[in-house]
Image (cartoon, rainbow, N blue to C red; front, top):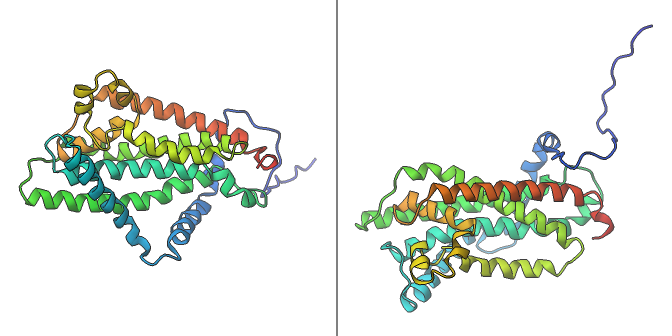
Length: 287
């Protein structure tokens, strides 16, 4: 009996997948869509603005000036001997990327409900595109930070980079995965509780004060030892401290803290993907 050739289909309808199936193969298959979504996010966000991409520079510059005046001059908070604008710019650059990934990913179901209900594609593509598009903004702000480093270095400020700067790609991955994981967990919850999105925006702003964006870890441990553990166990703290230590040579670096951050990030990311994939099957009925 002659064997018929195997037929290939564009879409296959299969029974429900295992909970541990992360669908990463489907995401790779739709990688072209990921690139298109990244371009769409970048163009649409600044399409009707007067200054366009200049906002990438304006926001961190004004935030740095305000932090320098309020926390550096009025409050007199230590910056580990670093120039105040440089110290705050380092924290703002890293924190903004994490916060943007978390905030925008946390509403991905609500913001794209109409699109999700019309056409099939791996839903994980959407939060991944948010994380990738935010890399453009992060890159521009990082360039501004490097220009500021060069300026103060030429002015004779007492600081200098060291070999820990090689950990920078690892820090970017940790920030992206941490924001992605927490954002997907919250996004799954906002399908039923819409007001949670407002709480997240407010909560992320407060969470910044529990990291070392506006003060060094050494100051928190010295002046507030009873509460310093909250800051130490914040997974963003080792990232910010390592970033400062690598680029500026000041701060507190610890392999143990960085390893703890990597472990928490891995757990949060896997949990977020699993919850996201589970909720995306039925979220259209609740959004």
